[in-house]
Length: 258
Image 1 (cartoon, one colour):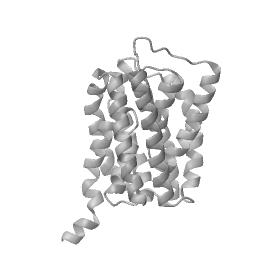
Image 2 (cartoon, rainbow, N blue to C red):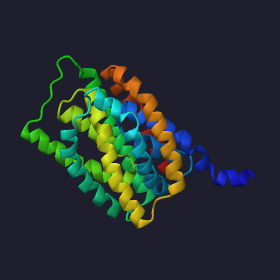
Image 3 (cartoon, rainbow, N blue to C red):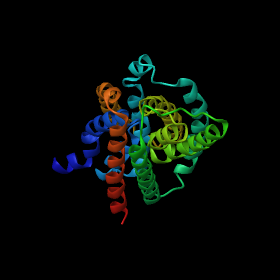
Image 4 (tube, helix red, strand yellow):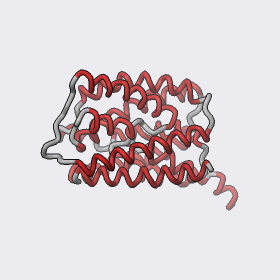
C-alpha cells in the first residue's frame, strides 16, 4: 500500500504543486512553469516527464484571472501578438530539440536562467521608480525584444516554463513597461507559447495526460486567487519576491545536479 502510494506520489502532489505554481505564476507573471518544473523534479518526477505536463498546466495559469486583467486595461495584446510570433517559432524548435537533451542538461539550463533573471530583477527593484517609468518601443529595442522572445519560446518548450522568466524581463528591462502591465501581458503570452509546446508534445507522445490534468486543476485555481493580489501589490515588491524565489530554486536545482 505504502509502496503503491510512493509510486504515484507525483499524482498525489500534482494538484498542490499546480496550485502553488498557478498562484506564484500569476503573481510574478511567469506562467508558473518555473515554479512547477523545479517542484516536480524535487518531488522525484523526471524532468522529461515534468516539462510536457507543466506546459499543459500553464494553460490554466494563463486563463485564470485573465479576463479581469483585460478589464483593468493591463494586457497589451497587440505587443503580445508581435512577440509571440517569435516565441511560437522558438517553441517549435524547442520541441524538436527536447529529445536530444539529457535531464541534467535541462536542469542546469533551467537553474542558470533562474539565477540570471534573479540578478536582473534585483537590480531593477533597486532602481525602480514607477512614477517616472517610461515605455520604450523604439525599433532597436523592439528587435532585441523579438529576438529574446524567440529564445524564450525555445526555453519554454525545452524547460516547460512558459517563457515568463524571460518575457517579463524583456517587457520590463528592454521595453520599459510598468511591472503590473508586464506581468499581465506576459500572462497572455506564456499561454500562447505553452499551447504550441503542448501540441508538439501530444504529437510526439511525451505528454502524461493524467499528471497534466491534475496540475491544470491546481494552476487554474491558484491563478484565479492570485490575480486580485497581484494588481494591488507594489511593483518593487513583485520584483523582490520574484528574485528571491529564483535564487532559492536555482540553488536547489544546482545542488541536485552535483
